[in-house]
Length: 627
Image 1: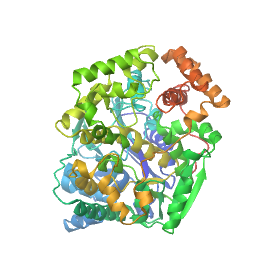
Image 2: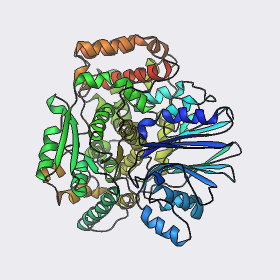
Image 3: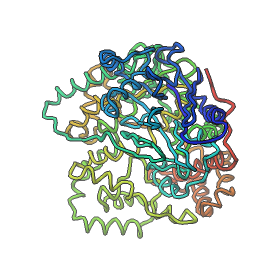
């Protein structure tokens, strides 16, 4: 929907500073801008008009006596219901936007407003009388919200890059984040790569008053698995709650389209949404493209599909610009493909539906089958399995078949599972690679999460970890940043409060029956879409990185970065170059021992570092597509 930036504290040329901050996020809201500035605070806003396209919907918004000021990014899908309650309570609305509901809702209910919201949101309300800032983020973390306290000033906003324009901001690289990044492919905590800058965690809000910042949690998911209903009844409930969520997510005064892959999530959403248009991207390499399957599905339900083949050249050439939009490096190769998907969609629409969140809620990742598939091996006493794991790690050839299995099952779930598709570098590998070594940090991140689901089954534990790490810091971060880079709002109907309430009750058997995942969701989908799609095994977003890294021109591009001053500053480059050379020679390209993700993680970090720290300030890409 938009983006905002602001600060509380003294600074010269307050309005100019705010405008400079706003200009860094113009891609989030090219339709209009607005600002509030007084002697204590400044709030700036860039708008992407979707609900109530008139000027009265512009932000900042004010309450009746203008004592409270709001900036808001996102959508509140149950705003009409809340609005009726507030009107009955005597509040006067001047627009038809969902934004104004937050302002009057906060007046009426205070922070308890957050318990009533269904939507995606990050917002801030400045109370001019109390000189207090209230800011909150949605329960899943769909919309980002950053903050920093520096030199007597509080900075806050949708993107970190806006902070760089404030004279009180000190741009310092946070090297402590690098070790965890190498393992997770993202920063898995509320810290960022900018020292002193933090992201507000999902389901949290903060209050800032008299220089004091207080952060509180207002929401925590609870997977009970206590549903006693029959499978058929649950399937009907999934169908009903998803229909309602999709209808709410379609509320808009502009056209709503849908992303479409070949999998069940986006296909089911597309069918339920009955959108007019769908969008797909892929690559020329056969197994790395879902375009044909997506087109066939779209045709089967009589919908238009616009597809784009991404060339290797454009993928690599846009990497630096994409890192600018991301704010921080996320080494998921799908992030770049998502940029091109959103760029394609933004040529035609402002809003798309997308399937993020279904795997975390309904049990969709293939690795969730692992605890159920190896029950016989897991009956071996742990001391013996641990000894086998250590033997495999230190004595067997690195690429020997079965080595990884023994290593993984020589550890408890808590010791081996950190988040879906992560553990790119082990802590031991990261310690060798980093010049300053790596302070063990993975368990510090995951242990508190496992503690909260102590006593639950293994799949539920994995879901919970993914909901707090992989979903927040990878899936949703790239979804928001890549959509907003192209002034496109991405809505995620699976991540709805009511959908979560149902998913929390599902017993293990309704989530995973190895090798089948998302059992209840697939049951609902199979009632309305073809079985070929409803039962398709999860593919992810396939990207031919391993293939490209063997091509001379891309090998040379990475090699140049691996010998750069920045690489020498942080890494033992001989390890990097050996890894890169072995990959090119074909020594590590089998599925079970492939280092391309390791190479990519370091390369993306270096591209990002060059963009943000190789120059005084990163420059907004001239190629930004604004509507």
